Length: 195
Image (cartoon, rainbow, N blue to C red; front, side, top):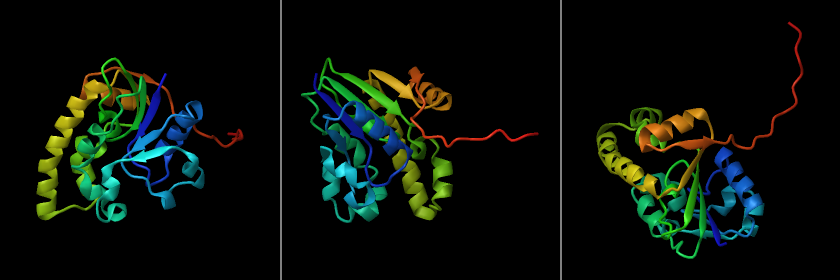
């Protein structure tokens, strides 16, 4: 069976990347497709992985302007050639679930959350201090991103959510059920504190 793993972006290290590492541990020979890969921002051991980037990495100043290219990501993920894979596992909180598997392939999406900036736009705009004309343009363009997000949700065979809250969002936005599998986390030992 030919397996591919797809992840939104590799330019910051957080919880989604730890989930990606757990997936990679299970499927170490699977290539990892992503939009951009900043070698300097990621742990050194990622350099031993088979990481394949999209054309977004060739755009000017992609490290600094990657958020500004938000309308490009749907096209970049749809254009990834995954025709030879029987199983696709996407790790997504944005665009990775929008890849186009070949007919008959299985696509499992581990969803960290449906894209917050598209579905909770007002909170995102306030948090990022986007104002004026930029705010109006972003609100307009994100309508198209939301429409694409709903349409591309049907390309997923099975959803896995990282929590009940995310499973409820998947149901609300995509009309799909999800199995809840909490992400792998390291918990520090704790001590009982007397009352």
